[in-house]
Image 1 (cartoon, rainbow, N blue to C red):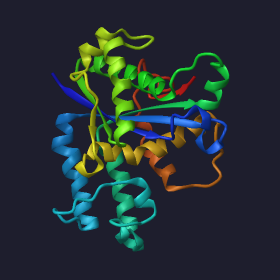
Image 2: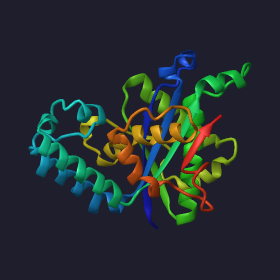
Image 3: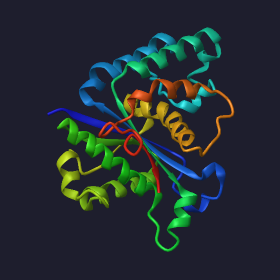
Image 4: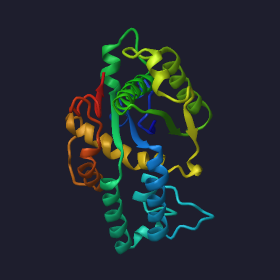
Length: 260
């Protein structure tokens, strides 16, 4: 039976008290679903090849793709200050993002709207997003007649405990729409896999590269932001349109989901 992994990246924060701040109004979780065999045979070696061939990675000091450091050309991405190197890097990344085999699910919650609707009782925003994201992951696994697990990047002590608790609750108790038995049938681990950035997990790095563009994509689709200028992320958006998960041939609601 084929096994998949969903690599999850969080953009924004789950704090409802910050929902009135336009810069902190939205929380998104983006999951990248990849077959583990494909990670081993294709994704990992090809991503490492980019680091080796363009960024001159040394094996004793692996380069970890991180969107903010890439954009700011900070160490270890200072080679991207050279225009020719930057052009080659961007062209290569866009080609790989188009060619690699993976599926995207992005769930966005408007915390301001959520707070206004649930005045007495409110979901925890992160848990709400995670539940909806994993429901769609289970739909994917069911369609593929496959199983899978879930991995996130470590955020540190308390944050990791929060993530693990949310996952464990879903695994043991199910969600509003899916019973726990289904979680246990398709997920191969009752525990969330949490890995530090230094572990050089290329699936997590792919999620990091795609999380912000996918967030921008869903915000633009729902007219929650205006496209004031063209940015490199828009080129990423254009190449990943076919990568979103579709159920019953429908993208909105499955590969892209807005809450509440």
